[in-house]
Length: 127
Image (cartoon, rainbow, N blue to C red):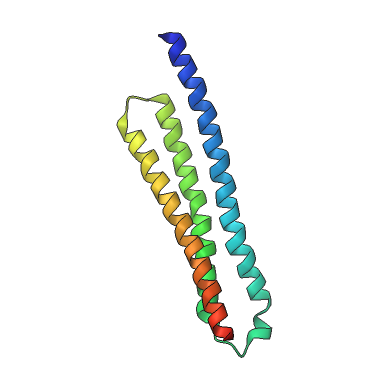
């Protein structure tokens, strides 16, 4: 039985490391996409004086903020993961992990949605 638990622990660790790496890459991509495009747009605002782009900037800024908030969720999730590793029988740790997962996905989706809205609004401002 002990050998089976050691094998499960090893597999758990491998999958956890993979999930963390994928999450970090995804959050970085969302953050760079929103923040980079927002800064690029801000650098061109002088050339866009004749266009109504206030809401565009707001949408992109909201996307960048939401993407950055995912890092807080990742920190909270790492703490919940640590608690779960020390006490696997406590189901509240699993609920925290599940809740933080949903929260992170919602924030990422909302961030990408804000980016998309900003793109559409900018396109409409030019037409």
